[in-house]
Image (cartoon, rainbow over all chains, first blue to last red; front, top):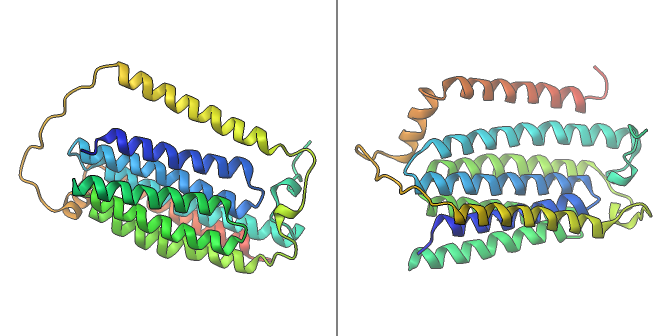
Length: 100
Length: 169
């Protein structure tokens, strides 16, 4: 029997993989993909509880999360392109323009 | 029983492809693993009875966002891979440590949730209609204003992406 706890564990594991990707990788494109993984983990939680509570509101919020993720990807990748045009790098260690 | 088998198989694929996304050396491979990850997450949504969100997941994530990522990976022509550059100030172990701290926090929250009694969930009331119909009904009644704000957000993001990516205005 699959309970919401199973889905929560799956979601937490996916979230952790995303967090490790954000913390450890240096390629900013991979970091953005890790953020998408994190948002997916959130969506799995929302849908699992929507199914458990027999309430569709969770799915509505998952759709909002997907919309925000699309907006974030568009703007973030635009920033990456603009930065790459100036500095010829996608390495976050070299992205220190605004450091004190 | 069938549900359990489907859940475990899908979970294994989701987590496996997520690890490959994070660990792949080649960025293009990483993007392709991300597509497979999104498709398996969509299958999980179907298992949970959320067909509409599953279709949106395939269309928006696997169809739209990933193509955007692929375009950027192709445009950003990497002469030397970012991982080859080594910054002495970067601490990879610290990254793993911070991720472990987040895991501990999640475990603490889960343990707290296990201690407090859960409220039994009421059975669904009213006639069950199609999933898409229910979602659409909520989106255009109770959540009309957030829905419109989301559309405005997407418009602003579109304009912002064009402004950022354009060479000169």
